[in-house]
Image 1 (tube, rainbow, N blue to C red):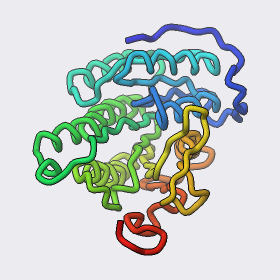
Image 2: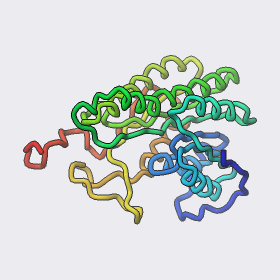
Image 3: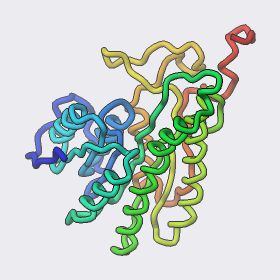
Length: 275
């Protein structure tokens, strides 16, 4: 665990100030060390939340912890391999012992194996590793999160990061199947926890990435703008779904943010010929 206390400082990134949509709340973002997870953590901090992050990479976690500390006090980072059940349980116990409960849990961690071919696509060990990270680890944290909220008779928000590949073929079946499982988990948990006032929603992004200069990169299969999606747009969507102000009556939803990528078969080129 890396966590430490910080005094509140001005946001040195030059980013816009938020409107306090998540003021007084505490969020935990898994996979918060880079790309989508980092963007969600920063956007939630700008909206007033105390943000905790967990990441498998200690260096990345510490860097984002420092970025968060420049926005809002109380930032804390944990090193976590979500595929390891004992690590999930340890983090759950640590969070349960906090004086302030977690109000928002963002299940962002997602493993993507390198492109597979032939029989590799259906290798059991690959599937086990993928589901341990993408599904089962998140389940452990969700169970602890919901149990704590139920005991405290408090409401909260569960958010999952899925993918358009829960519906669209990617030729990495273990990955796509794990994301499809997440899509159904959102619906099942939404019904399970609705009576407790706990909302459960998801985001299905397309191609999300920035260049080293912080700009979107060209992507010829994305119809709208023809580029990748900057991760901060996923972060802002996460704020929307986590906020009672906007989403108090939203649960069981999967918000697609893909610039139109999933609207046609992007395995075809612009002339309609199969690649």
